[in-house]
Length: 398
Image 1 (cartoon, rainbow, N blue to C red):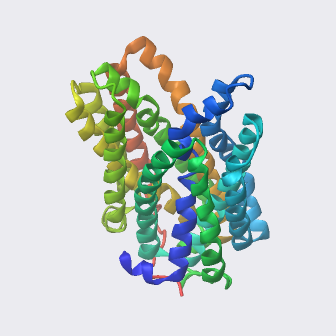
Image 2 (cartoon, helix red, strand yellow; image 1 turned 180 degrees about the horizontal axis):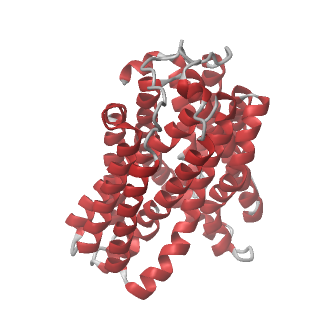
């Protein structure tokens, strides 16, 4: 897997992917300070909180269109435009004079993320195939997990200095831009063996993609119970201190990053149906542990299982999108997956909060665990390769 780091194209695509994890939570540590800074504006408390979710909403709405644009006008130009817009919109918080304008800039940041995610995922399908593609998907999720952890710590430190401090981090896109430009400046060449099976897509790829979109959306409805409900759940266990929530999210991120490093080997051994099935079962185990938890220890173990499941599922969804779709429709497929992921994030607190209020945390987590077991069975049955489908070539594109 680490041999991919010798390929400049892989480095450039990893850098682009690392930007997308910064879109939402990077400014979370600064929200109280931002709200206080603009306290004189009407609805300041609500607008400050919307700064976190606004990019996700825009990504969910625009990703399919961004994917179609990548197929129509080119993935490389779109990626460059997205990275440039990311830098402009992300750092706008440093100088915009009002909270309303800051919210508008966050909407444009969501546009940038939609452009980046769809173009970057489609380019992965253009540059890599077979086992190399699976290895890259795992490496990408590991890089975003570990990179996100570092950037979040840095954001917390900068937020302590100034509520606008975290916006400086978005400027890293200006550093990445020339690297991406020079590494990917030559046109994408089809993966070696592109005339075989997977690069021409599957006969019924739309049906398979629709199932993957459903599974990805449901995955993130469940997954985002952790970041959206963790502080309140831990408070119910007697651990209201912020450090406990930080440990829980850190355990999840670390486990996800480690599991992602082994994704390529797991995918090769288990195949495209059993790999996500195992990921959903790890998810289910984590939420079952949450349901049984009476203290922080079992909750930390549960978050590690959830992180490990995420480390298997996210690269599976992205990999399947570019594997099953025809080469000329990879941008559209990537957009569909991106929309499902961000829609799931947006819907998660809407779906979970009423359940928690009426049933409590243990029952909600137990129910979530049961739903995830059902999703594992759906993945196991629905994603089995059809008979006669050509085996994936195990090589790196030239």
